[in-house]
Length: 227
Image 1: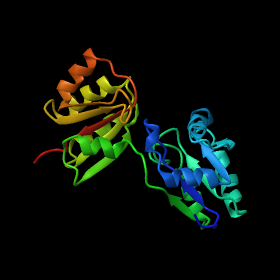
Image 2: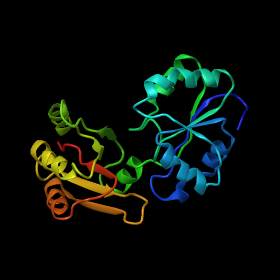
Image 3: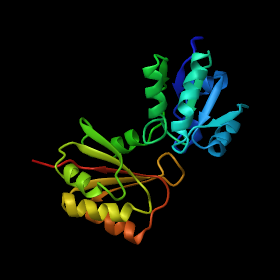
């Protein structure tokens, strides 16, 4: 790693701790400062990697306040590594505000390749992978129906994140807005011991998860509108 001070986004495992890369471990060992979404979660990872470093909290509740001071620390010569609880920072996780602030200040930003839930889910879905759109989490209330109406006309494969507590409701809304026969795939607990991949129509999946209440992290892959 070069000696230029920078911000480095470091993907962390979404489940299986062996999914950390050798380069990511080296960055975490040598960084001057490590920012974590939840220090309690990330401290377990660092302990597993035998890295003894203090973590600073950087999450959605404080990022507006801390971003400026972090950029200043990098400008003063510190290399800062940013990690989230799981996956790649800034992808449905804190990071965008800090990256944007660094870019505006001409501070160097790097992102290591690594774990993320959306790509494995898309790859195993059996749905077209040549063109897709990633929606992250849909709005819970305001704007949700408007977004669903737009996605109903989307010809590309759609990848979304969803809470296990809202999965059945979401699948029901997909049946309503996209049609009951639209194909989909629900990926649960990717890379973990109880990984589950279920394929079918949105209606079939709604019935299944009504009878088998899901737990854990959820990725939904939905077929695009067919001409």
